[in-house]
Length: 291
Image (cartoon, rainbow, N blue to C red):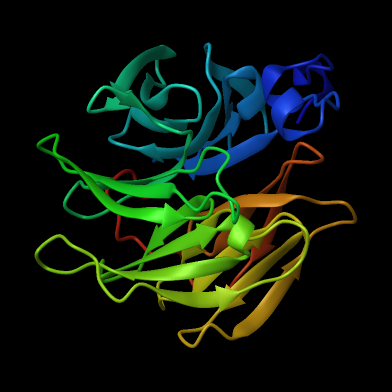
């Protein structure tokens, strides 16, 4: 992140999440558009940045919010999981910001975190707030194209990143303060059943962002360790990607011409890390090819 874009000033987000430590940025939610531009969110200062293929950064939008997970609804509309405001929409051509879903039955969300879209246009998103083992009431929702909102899980100790299997029949859910990843079967009638713990991690901060490759392998960003785990179908690590010393690897996205390049937000340093893999990312969800 260019020095000119860093803000060395207090924020309400840093007061709550970084012990009051001055935080000049906290990058999350990487996603690509169809032109190969990478978009990332800066949570504390309500900013969305566009990084072009040459590596130049520009401000795409700025508003009163705490944006986290990002996905494209179409070529120009970015859907944002915003901790402060719920689901938001941004027209990346103009920077115009609008509400997509702020409340459920007039109740405010705890703090929306991340999201994924399936091939039918359903939006799965997590409502994390400050939940954890002391308060296992985090939620996983599905918002259908017709506007129906389904509560799929309401007992999660800190639901965070979400990803879908290539066939759309399984959802993987990062449970940060439980230090694990859950496996959530999605049944034909729209319900879930036999939810299980798929992977168990360790360390001071558990799994955050997730991705799935074309083989169905699950990639898990672990900020507390500065790792990205690459897990096979048995949840066995077949590779561990390690960030630089002090890295906080929070979220990840596939990009590049062959979609075999993994891009990872290192939120501690305000950097984007890259790794070349042997398998492209899954193309299940709707949106631009690079998303």
